Amino acid sequence: MSSSPAESTATATAKDPSARSLPARVLGSRGERLAESQPARGARVVAYAVLLLLGAAVSLTGCFVQALWPPAGLVLALAATCAVFYGGLRVTGTKLGAGAPLVGWFLVLMVLMAPRPEGDFVLAASYTSYTYLFLGAVSGVVCATLPTRGGFGLLNP
View: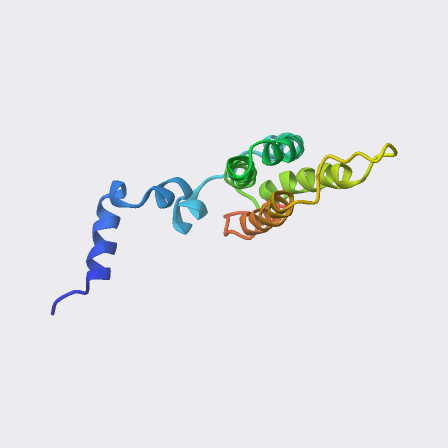
């Protein structure tokens, strides 16, 4: 019996991890993510607080960067946003690790979208702003739904 090309590629990838594509090596496989150990509960609590602040900082800088250098600034802001969400997931090993920076990101955006008494606002009504809002929120939700070893953070030992 001869094997199909897909089976031979899967076998070669399993034997040689460097044969995987760059995104597959960076993001890891589902099995690799599920096999990762979680940090201690105290370390996770500190990580959640730091991730909340990091999400807020990325949101603030992303609002300015996406408007400063369109469209490259938009790509840069979205890459940083995705990196924080996914990094939180991988550092803590829980879905709350992606949710904490998402909460910080949204809180800052709610403040920046409100007009000031002078009539000024930070996040203008433009296609780059709307794209940043939509794709940033989608990336946060996608990262928060990726499979992890632990559930929602503090309930796990």
